[in-house]
Image: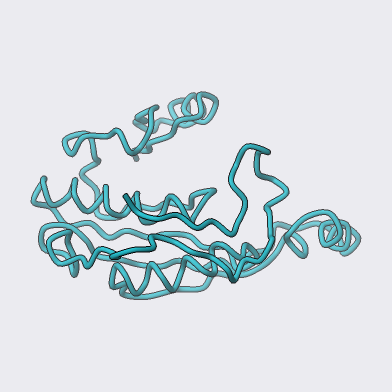
Length: 181
């Protein structure tokens, strides 16, 4: 398998496990550096900012390679920004399916209540949404057919004042309003 990671410790771990890893910013990858795979998967920390940019970059790379790839993007149902980003991504990039995956990372019922008080997740369990897209040369959608937003790139009023407690202090909270350049 192959992976693109920027954190040094993650890169070392994946290399140790036998993966071919590109250890630098995904957005700086050139088309020839993208893997020759059938499926790409990502689940970014800042879905409202990264998902669309990563999808556009992926589409451009696979169009240039004259290849098609299935992209699967993860969305956490407990993370409000993900739940705002999911329908937007499905509409904008003509998603083909959303599959739901129940997960349970274990823990006691006492842990669940501690997490509910201190973090955004009600326990170590929940529903993970996997959105599927077919992009590239022969894909359902490519950059030539993509309607770019005319004014607002992303607004997330549905997030309210929510802030992921796991995020670094310098990370922009949700909501994030950004005008495209």
